[in-house]
Image (cartoon, rainbow, N blue to C red; front, side, top):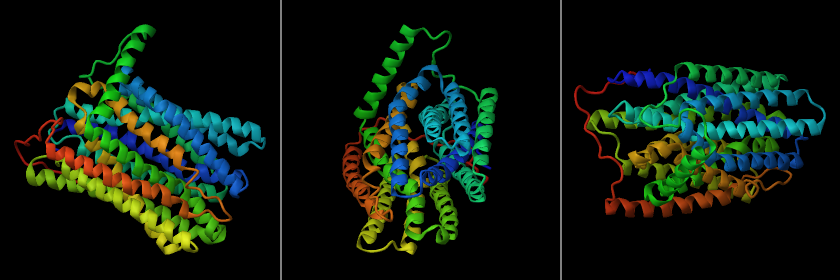
Length: 460
């Protein structure tokens, strides 16, 4: 259990943990079970893969269109209401999906898939920026000098553990022929989490969210100002802009590999040969993702205990770039190897482990870094600014998903070379630009604060 001297941390952490665990459980189901089921549902061949990719692209288009509007809504009416609504929508999405298993009419099944995708997209975008914004601004409101980094990073570790539970339960039920049960469980947990947030979650009081009746003209004017200010910060503050570009690029690559590796494994090695390796890779995925998140958390804690300051942004950025390059290079090597010959299983497993370390590390590293560069006076646009980064990520996924597919008799990892090359180039360019910014010593962030009083104690 995380323990800081400041008792306010525990209040924030309780809500953070419950929300991350529920979200992680749902992500584990959707990433590892849903798309594989659709692949089998549509026939299990290259045509089925194209349909699955088409559905994925529709999901990303919906995410793209709703990311910023839902971020604006969170900054307008409050993060608590937005998070509650998010869990209601993901519960509804799971409820719709479980009925697909009992439908033989393809047109009706298609309408369920589209409806579930819309609910899932709205849920994802409502949650995406608002919850991190709630953590950061609540930590600042409580004047927790250690900053949002340790809490935010540890919460991602818990999310990964919950993903593992959701994935293992889902795969077990999927192989047993009862996959709809996992979506029923996800639906119930989501609605319970929404109820928990409604009862116990405290809204950030220092930000003047809109109260009372939603008057259309006044709300539109306020949300327009949120959009304009959020866009200015996203594009005019160099560290925010550079980190959005790099994060969007490397997470695009990771999500493509994460979405396609089960299908790639199945199409290259067959159902009878893949079961053991499927479970091995899934367990390895979560272990390595957890190592990535936990490694960043431990490093932050050690730095705080040693220096009585939070980790400098320049040090965090350097780690961010190194992990991005390792991720891009490893997937490029795998793709190049597959281009020259059959897929090497040992190399495939090793690369999956590497990009999952990146997945665990990069999400909390990015959210820690970017939130130190959003000026205090723009905290009321924080969800919107974070939504711009997610919107850019979804745009890249729409662009690169089909080129990364390379549908053949067997799905080839060689298609991952293009997005991998993009990540390598973008990481080098953004690092050069960021180093130039650091050398100019343009400081928008608050200075590091010395932690006074007794030494900070952590109980892990």
